[in-house]
Length: 461
Image (tube, rainbow, N blue to C red; front, side, top):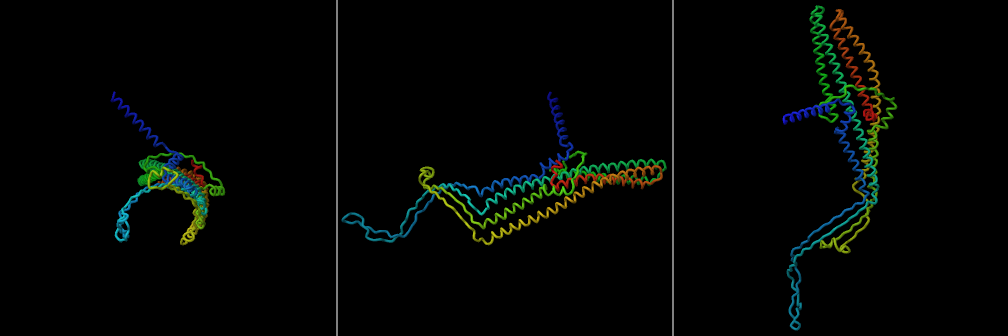
């Protein structure tokens, strides 16, 4: 019974491990890869944390306008040792009539004052309130809110970047796998040509040199196939890394991907980019934050006003601190006004530097707009060109297939040479490779274009 039970447990574990392995290696779609990357990518996690910090900073920015309340308590013991001093000590004698001591003079001598010890206990409640600080508190709150929006746009831009990277790596892996099929087909053709040439040589139709050429061609195609396998493995590792996985983690993706994406006119794309690109919006909000920084630095040229209230209890006995409430207390209230007249030009320099930061941010925004428009225009034109090139390459592919068929047929009939066959075969393989590359380069360009205009999340999720 024990043996059957152990056997059953082993069988169940094997089945569970098999199911787990299948679930881990099932082909992933593009959307699944994107979701994994958004969850695991280190940059995304970092910018999520930065966004959370920005939200916390909004709460802390209200500290300059809310009252400050503190409570403190202390206890100490003060001890003084015996002390000596020079003093005039009275000289006395007894009055014979009254029997009372009478001072008859003074004598200067050293006197010892005995030491003593004293306890001291106190408790304080202090409340202070900022009334006016030149607008610093208000602009600090506004800047923290703007920085929170900046962090949100920053996170959104990083998400777009990660989605684009995953899409590029996903389609690149698909492209390399398709190219692997192209090279595999080239090897198959070379094997068929070698077999045909060998039979023709045995029949005396061709020379031995044709057999050697066919073998060399097969070897070269096999080398290309091996190299392409390495390229596929590198593409798989790159996709794993962009998803936050270990490079050598087993990974399979869906082999077929329907591509029916269309792009609107260039003018519409440009307007979309100017209104939805998160990096552009981040830079705009960053300018707003720097405007608030300028206002904050200017606040130092205005006086600041605050009020305070303090309640203090003090006594040499601890029990008097928390009892006898009507005694042993002191209350202080007041208003404090300060105005910085001169601090070595530091305030003036801070204002000037803040204005320079603002100016640089505006320059950077304008430069980014130019780069964005150029990038959108270039990607749009590349997309259009690739669409046209694909159609041309498909026509070339059909022509290459017919060229290869005719060259093979002529060689079989003895009116062609093995070099003609090889040239036609190389042309066919190149045509197949070019079509595959152009088709996936079109998709990759589309992903780059969607990131540029800020719509990649909508396009691929």
